[in-house]
Amino acid sequence: MGRDSDVLQVSVWRGASAQGRYRTYEVPAQENQTVLDVVSWIQHYADASLTYRFACRVGMCGSCAMMVNDQPRWTCRTHVRKVVKEGKVRIGPLRNLPVIKDLATDMDPFFDKWVTAGGVHAPSATRDEPIPPVNPEETARLEASAGIECINCAICYAACDTVAGNPDYLGPAALQRAWTLLNDGKHGARDQILDAVSGTGGCHNCHSMGSCTAFCPNDLDPMSAIAGLKRETARTFFRRRRG
Image 1 (spheres, helix red, strand yellow):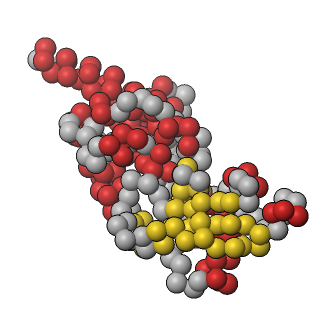
Image 2 (cartoon, rainbow, N blue to C red):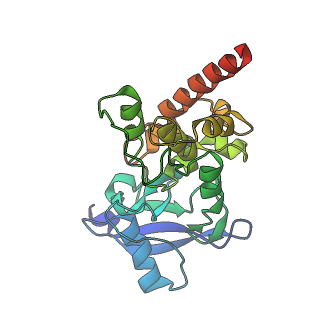
């Protein structure tokens, strides 16, 4: 990173949502260093009271998601050299979620919406009944599989301007999960999903800006899933009107 960057100026959010502020720390710059490494260094050597989350450190769990220079990222997979600007980095808690303390957010609103959108699997058969055959190349099955790698890191939720302006909006992760189950032949509550995602805060609130897809670290496409829900809820509406 060069001699001029031997020390990083790292601004980190400290405190809760209302009372917090950014505090700057000087952190030694390393040749191969992630943003999570920087946060860990601050907690270990500068201020042991710094609160944040992480688990796997290899991009599997998503618990280390934070705002880096005002963009949501997995900090364990974000190298400092890719985001540092003039020796400075700004790290904050995920946007659109209440801040518990420092870099740790309250994930309850995110998961509550996931459930509200019908994200809990409802089996279409009992364990005593035979499993229906599944064609992996069927269009519905491909749609169901497209979003299965979502790990609920809330990156898309933090990136979404619709969530920022409309607290009732279910958000891209919850709606993508609804689309996955809607296309799963083993799911037995299809009508309930359509009712949930077509109501207040549902898929038709999406403005199709695409930030959810652009920022997803797993290269998923929530925007297309939401577009699928819009089409299906519209078809269902007119089908029900016809009786």
